[in-house]
Length: 241
Image (cartoon, rainbow, N blue to C red; front, side, top):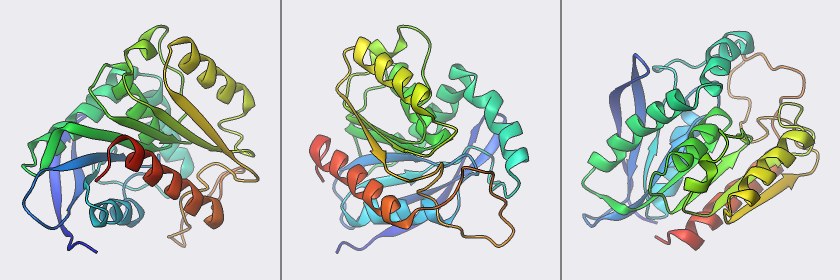
């Protein structure tokens, strides 16, 4: 297991000061890098641990921020912030590019080997970076199956992996079908994994006693681990460390 070093990075985006978590593998050589986008609730220790786990595998990993360091326990407050964001592709791209610039500024990052992986809102941002034509080696999105503007998916130049819970009311079958049709019509190398019985945000454990969950939202530890293995497999296939 490689020795991992971490540091907090602050950067401007969306009129806020974002607070990211950068994890570096041992050594001094350039490494493939992963931009990690958080769930709509925001960045917390769960995303930090994901970045650290990728660094242990040999990747430079940045757990990025979307709310200026805030983590929402109240889903209504979170939706008031996220819904306008999800409806604005240019705004999502700007937030993603700001984080990507931080990742590219890290000397250990190999600029020719970068992937974007996100969860929920962070996954939608990862997809928008692809639709914007950003040079990525892979895109992974869990519960972030937001379709883009017509024709934009043709700019995606890398494999796309998507995961969703079968019982997710926020990403129902119609949304999955629309995402699949968009990817297919654009000629994207895509795949979609449906995790049976899983709700929305199945990948995020309950970490706070004051957290309020909407109906249809809840953790599924078994599928969370399977989805993580699928993300790691995507990276190993497209951008081996």
